[in-house]
Image (cartoon, rainbow, N blue to C red; front, side, top):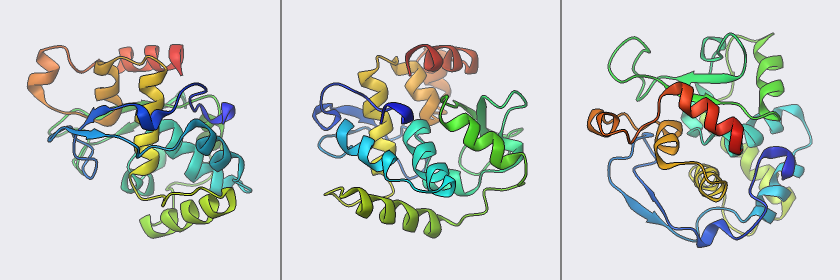
Length: 203
């Protein structure tokens, strides 16, 4: 969907992307993803099939941020930057002040109002992982998406869309939450400021 920031050309399922273990948000063991992400048309239909703001908060946010479902479920008002344009997510359940630096996730022009308005009233996302999964499945059935919408599919769709939009590997690493110190020292992970600047320029 143009409104949800998905790609408009090519088939992301034909884009092979080096990505690590998606279950913990780190790039530990590279694997090649092929024919897993949704096509742009499928992503458009999925986004358009959302009927409520609750469904949009789930589906649009996952499509436009690449968050893990568990990260989305754990979101609180404290994760939203004061300006409202970014989320700050600690890695692997560690507090922001310890261990790896938190990842910064810019919000698209479509996702930002949903997140800002919701957390202007509520302190937490208030959905379990299971509830989020049920919402994804219900919207996917309504959109007549052929493949099973697993926990990883929308994250992979975000990666494929980012690659098609020309987002650089260091910024993509930052968005996915790669916390390797060596990678950071070698310049393979962009700073939070670089992530924000490039995301808004290209998404």
